[in-house]
Amino acid sequence: RQMCIRDRVNAMRLFIAVELPKAVRNEVGAALKELKMLSSGGRFVQENNLHITLHFIGESNDLAGAVKAMQSAVRGIRPFELRPAGFSSFERSGSRTAFIEVGGNTGELAILHESLQTALADNGFAREYRRFVPHITLGRSVEFNELVYAQLQETEFKTSFTASEITLFESVKEKGKLVYNPLHREKL
Image (tube, rainbow, N blue to C red; front, side, top):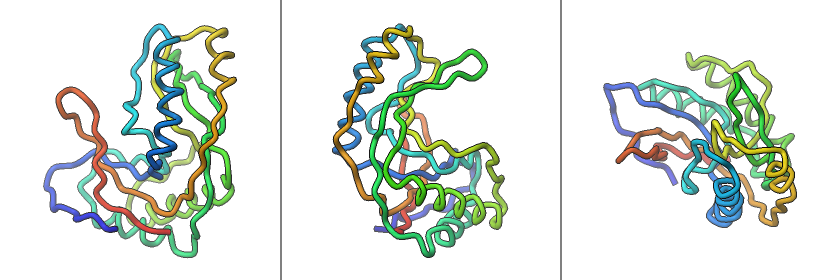
């Protein structure tokens, strides 16, 4: 299903991601609720905003270029299975980001990611050079101790899903909360 793309003069905050089906969002959302309860603070993602980021574009109004890149990137890519795999975190500049690792056919996901990087660069967007680590972000600046970390690592996930499209999102603030509006979906 294609979304209508609006002509915009102002730059929008854009990113391309794999959306999670409701059952997966619910299961990962349960882990998110547990993290909120056990941590002593952080900026947490809303359950409806959970996704697997493929590329953060940033401020841009080049919707046509982003869509063209998405169309090019998915050529030859077939749907593939993914699943939430386990709790983890990384620290950068003294701030901890908590996330759920992505398992399943991550080799095919890496091929899709690389194809998208190339297609975006061919369409004038900045290429990301850091190593791609597929994950579902739960929160940033999250504060928790090693006991909590060990407890969260015991979380088991039972859902999986077929990744069959990628989505271009606009990130906007509405009533003080981040909302991710889908602007375009491209089927694999």
